[in-house]
Length: 216
Image (tube, rainbow, N blue to C red; front, side, top):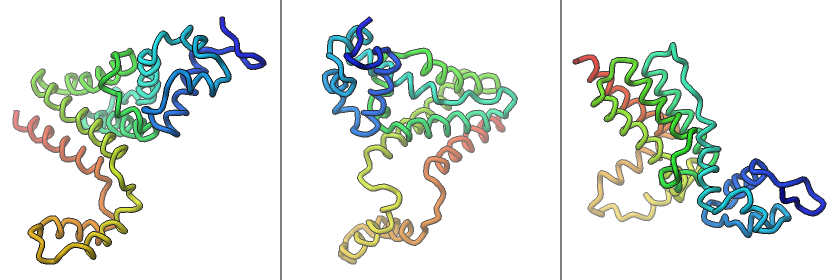
């Protein structure tokens, strides 16, 4: 087993944790085996002993994040179970924003498959038909992944919304042909206590499927 000079021996876990930490701080695009080897005071070939390629390392990194998603209480209602799954996935992706860039690109591993299966299990075991479960699954997972991507890529952080909105309203021409957009920005600026957008849209999705089930 390769060892680093004067250091603890390498392991898959040690390499994986270093890769995750680096991506958390610098983003996934800058991560490469050579850079990681330097951080671990090792040679690049030593890392390839544990991960045969960068793709294999990225697979493991996605699995690392997916393992953080909580399993819902089997006794919970379908709505509570899905809400818990969605929020847990949202929080895990928020802790590691880089993952949304590669979540759907990497090879499906047991942890990500377990998450997907959990969503479908909650739905199917609580009265959803195969067709309804498929549609609900798509809506829920697209919302989770899309929200994570927007949060990671959007140039403004929530704490900066008010300042940016005020600056926009000061700069825009009052006669500009965008009255509803201006109205929307003004509303956002004047309501700092609006509900979290992820939770708000998730509730809308669940309300829709709840209404559909009630009319079956």
